[in-house]
Structure formats: structure tokens, C-alpha cells
Length: 328
Image (cartoon, rainbow, N blue to C red; front, side, top):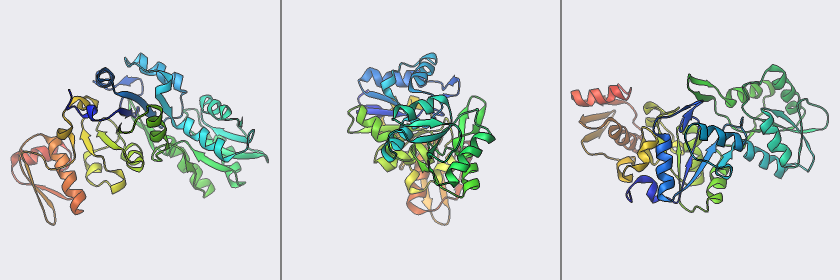
């Protein structure tokens, strides 16, 4: 297993929603993949933008799904937001919480006072995902933000992967406040690099690998932190989205799911792949045959290098592969 992708790193930092699980449903192969990383002796960290659960609750959920985990391995955007507020505000400052009680507990642990209604003494607003967030919560936050309070968003993920499909994420609620206040929040979680940097530091890692499903948060955060990243197609990322990804959202490796962590690293890199020939012109012309994901890795390499994203197939095998990737 020494040539396995994970073997080239001293820690693997896993996103959760859309990467390890969809809500209450574990993604097939995830427990085995994480277990293989642990068995090799590589440090494991779970790095999530979801601020709705305390680290202990995240551990409970992971264990219920068949994964080993301890609290010190979990890093959430709620913790990042609380740390940011603690750095910027004096001790005891009043913070309006839009989110769960566990988010409020993180803020209070940072030495601040949490409230649910705006008043003249409110210094900040912190906003994280909660399925219970309603108009009155947003109204209190809007009043405080318009009065000059610091606004910190745990994350700006517009959607949240679940076992039923993509649901509105914290970013959708942030968008409502952005419209109502004409203000921009300070973002504590991904795509800011802080969560990944903190997780890597806690593992004593100098060469971590990030694994995630979302280009604008997981991959962008890893790129910002200067870390290699494996993008998986079990959540939000799509072949079409990868093909048109901007430089700040481009992974170094690509796979269908977490089970690829045990495959040879060279097989997963974005770049030219055996069996496929791609000619660059006004369009990317594909010839050959082989694995469809290999074709996507080669297409991303060609598209990112040339700026050409329109694809055309020559031959039945190429046409079938593009159709399977939803690129034809």
C-alpha cells in the first residue's frame, strides 16, 4: 500500500457532508477508506463547515455510521467563528447568535456573552446553519448588523448535501441577510484556510491531504492553505463544474469516492491519461477509449491549461464516455 495516495501524506483532512455521509446515510466505502488510512498510521482529522453540531455530537454521528472518531479529531466552522470573535472582541462582549445552541456554546467558551435579540450593546452577529432558523432570527441579526455590529458567518455553503438531495445551506440564509443589510460577513470557515491549518497543526502534520466534494469551499480552502486536495464526486462537485473550475478551485487529484485513497497516487492525478488523446483548438476534441474518470482528469488538465472548455468526441467510445460524464 506504499504507493497508495494516502501513504504520501502524514495526515488526511476529511470533509464530512457529501464526502463521508449524506445526512444520516454513510457514503458507501467511507468507513473502510478512513479505516485504511488509520491502519497505515496516518493521522485523521474531520473538518466540517457545518456549524450545527458540537464536536462531541459529530463524533457520535460518525460512530453511529461505523467510523472511529474522537473529539480532538473534529474541527468545525463554529469553533473557527468563535475563535475569530474571541480575537476581535473584548471579553464578555454581547453576540447575537443565529444558529444552534452548540454554536452559542462555542462562542461562550471563547469568553463572550450570547443573546438572541439585538440591543444597543450588541457587538457582533454570528451565523451558522440550523434547521430551526426563521424570519425572527434573521430580523434580529439584520437590526444588529445595520447598527454596526461585526457580522461573522461560519460558512457560506449555499447547499447542504443530505440523504434526500441538496438542501438550503447556511450560505442561503447568509444571502438573505446580505440582501437585507447590504453588508458582507467575515467568513470563518472554508474557503478560508484557517480550519485546514488548525486541523493540520493539531495532527502535527507538515504534509496533509484534504479530501472534499465542494469546489468553492473544500477545494478552495485547501488551495488557499497550500495543501494537496482530492476531489470526490459524491456530493456537490460535478464533471462540468470541474472542467470550468477557476484556478483557486482546482484539485490536484480526482476520484469517484473515498475508496480511491488506497489507489496509486499517480492514477488519480489531474493530467494526461493512458488511452485518451485530447486535441486543443476551438474545442477540446477527444479520441480513444478507457476509463471515464481518467478522461475527466485529462480533460481538466487540457481545459485548465488552454482555457477551452467546450468538448467534442470522435468515435463511439469517446462519445459514450462523455455522455457518462454528462459532458455530451
